[in-house]
Length: 275
Image (cartoon, rainbow, N blue to C red; front, top):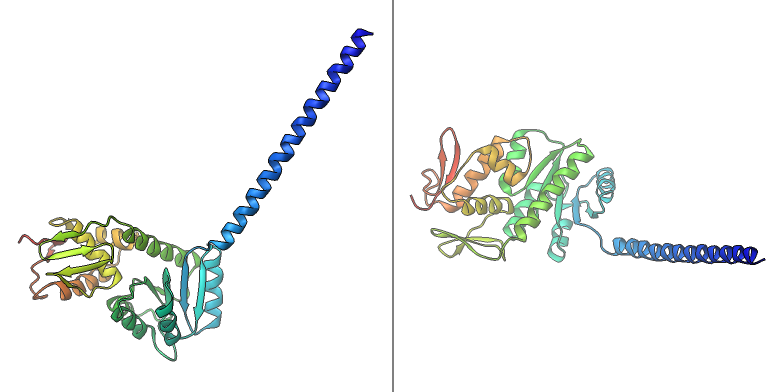
C-alpha cells in the first residue's frame, strides 16, 4: 500500500513539474512574440536611407522604387528637375538618382544648380546615353557616379550603398581640423579652405582633396585613389583625371603649373605643401 502511494506521489510530482515547464515555455513564447511585434513596429517607424529619384519616365520610377524598397530604403520620386530642386530646399536626402534627359530641366543643369547652392548630397546620374563625353561632363559638374540604362538591380544597389556609406564615413570623422600649408579642412561643416577662404569644391572633390590632406607627400596611383574614394574594383582613368583637373583649377594659383597637387609621371599624384 505504501509502495502504491509512493508511486502515485511520484507521478503527481512529475505532472506538476511538467505543468510548470509548460507554463514557463508559454511565458517565454509570449515574451518573444511581444518582442517580435515591437521590432516590427520599430522597423516600420524607423525607415532606412531616404533617396530622391528624379526621372520623367514613370516605369523607371516604379522599377527603381521597387529595388530600393527591398533594401528598406525610403524613396521620393518626382518627374522634373524644378520639382526636385524645390524639394531639396525643404528636405534632406541621402542620395539623388538623377536622369539627364527631362523636359523642364536636364540633369546637368540640376547638378550645376545644386552645387552652386552648396548642396553636396551624393548624386548618381542616370541616362540612356552611353557616350563618354556625357559621363565626363556630368562628373565634371559635380556628379558622384554614372549609370547607363538599362542597368541591373545589383549594380544600382551596390553603387548607391557605396556612395551613402562613404558619405557617412566622411561625415562622422573626427572633428579635428586638417591643416597642411595654406589649406585646411573642417569636418564639422565638411568644407575646405585656402588661406582662410572657402574653396568651392563638390562633394566628391572634397572627399578626394581631404584624402590628399590626410596624406601629404605620399604618392597615390590612379587605382589607389579610385578604390579609396569611389570604392569600385573597376578603374576609370578618365574619372580620376577629370577630378584632379577640377581640384587643381580651384586650389592652384596656376593650374597649368601645379605647385601643390603634382603628377608623378609613371606613378600617379602627390599632394605636398612643402615644395
